[in-house]
Amino acid sequence: MLLYDQRKEVLATAQQLLKGGLVAATWGNVSARDPETDLIAITPSGMRYEILTAEDIAVVDLEGRLRDGKYQPSSETPMHTLIYRERPDVRAIVHTHSIFATVMATLKREIPPVIAELALGVGGNVPVADFAPPGTEELGRRALAGLGKGNAVLLQNHGVLTVGPNLERAFTIAAIVEDAAKIYVYSSLLGTPTLVPAEILADLFQAFQSYGQQKD
Image (cartoon, rainbow, N blue to C red):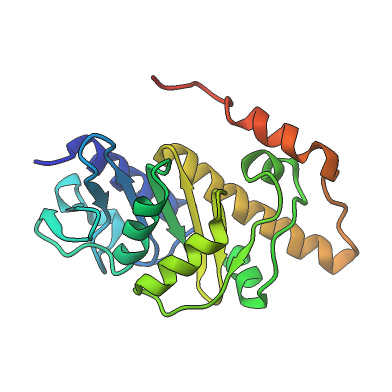
């Protein structure tokens, strides 16, 4: 079986998203790219995460062609593969429909660094990519433009996309983005939120790059 380790990680991350309330039912998707082969392990289309096995995770190439697995890959495969082709530093992608971040995406409003964790994980505002239909390469192009060199972007009227050097980091950023959106929405109801000082954003972001137990 191709990419067995990556398939297990993709499955574990998808199930974490479900347990954490960052996705519901079969929505959202997760992928990981193998840097040696450029093959991608990605969640299958329209299947419940809680009943999947590692074997059910699809493997595609950088053009989205199915290379291994019995199920069709996520409908958002064109977005994932485009980002991997254009951002060789990215080895993992998480796409969620988390509620509060999607509220901000629907308002087409960036999430500012209202908590230190967002400054650490993202380094500043989470931008909003212009709307494009789900499942299209155009959505990938707009997500890529919104990301720039960053690691998180809101998808207008759709959800959130985060990227990272591994799935653990991409998942962590997705969770941070949702927490920041929730705190921003609630604090805005009571007044004007105070943001993390702009002059320390870069230092906080840099510090996060070596946070945790580093893997070889």
